Amino acid sequence: MIDVAIVEDNTEVRETLALFINGSEGFTCESIYPDCEAAIKDIPNKLPDVVIMDLGLPGKSGMEGIQILKRKLPDIDFIVFTIQEDDDSVFDSLRAGACGYLLKNSDPNLILSSIKEVVEGGSPMSSEIARKVISSFHINTKESPLSVRETEVLKRLCDGQNHKVIADALFVSSNTVRMHIKNIYKKLHVHTRAEAVKKALHNKLV
Image (cartoon, rainbow, N blue to C red; front, side, top):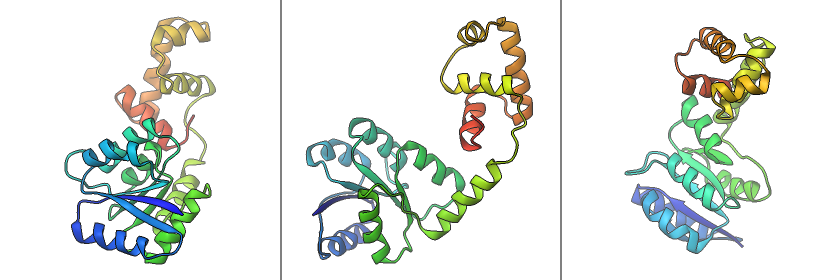
């Protein structure tokens, strides 16, 4: 029996989905929440196998909820269930710890098969989302604009290292590191470390 929890602020969607899951053989859904705050408080006590999470929730967003719960409960799998299909929502959710991404217009049977798939170690996605991910992969496999040394500096920035630590590790001066970072920002068309790290992860540059 696969135990499923639902975090969804729309009452009709939440209750209809719970009723459908409970009426399907091999599934149970006893935990339903209208917001992340309630889910974050109660899910550690219930320990479901899978959490179906909306993104556009009142209070904490679904993405925040996934991040918080995934840190506390790494063995629980999360499937995003949303109307949002923009690149940032998709990739940020996956980075936050979601294992699957379904649009709310998905066939109900796809929801059930996706729950099974994620429990078995898969990463189910609506076809539109899968195409988006594949398209991004093809785009991101283009040759990086960065040199080998710049890529190494960028990787260390992503790891949270400061200028001095990077300089010591690479046996160069802090000024040289600053020069590399300046070049990285210019080539990636960013202005801050946070933007550089986000672009590096999104474009698989490190």
